[in-house]
Image (cartoon, rainbow, N blue to C red):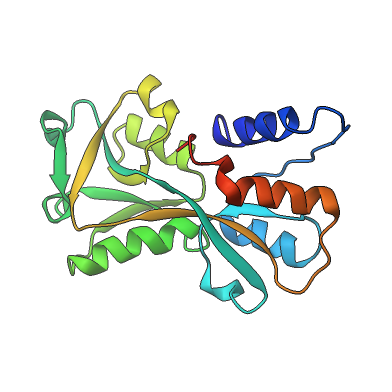
Length: 197
């Protein structure tokens, strides 16, 4: 929200200088955004994949994002630059809520290592998770966000298990799309995100 979406909008508007195109933006967790999409409150959504909507919604991968493990700067793991998630199991974890698209991704990582972590908080927003880690309530797997550089946390590269977090452009399968929305969809899928992530 702080970099990617504004840059997409700027790039799209720069390609359509002759048009007066208004934008109305919403933020939220994937489940809520996709619910609003189905209810016709939104035209398109940038989100994680959610299998609960696959019958009605087309998910087109448009970019990948790095996931990192964040720890407080005084945490024992902060001495490292990278980490295997197996080595984090003894510490309290802060997870995304079950309705978050990222929760499925993080759960998948721990399923790969057959690990069960001690979850002390479940939170919807990644910035709030980072704030809790900055107060040393636990550690967390989150997207590598610009805000992390300004917080009292250290981001560690995850070396294992292997993972990939995709961003998807989501839109309804059988719904009319206004021309300007179709143009934005084409802009994003043709590479409007390629230089941003």
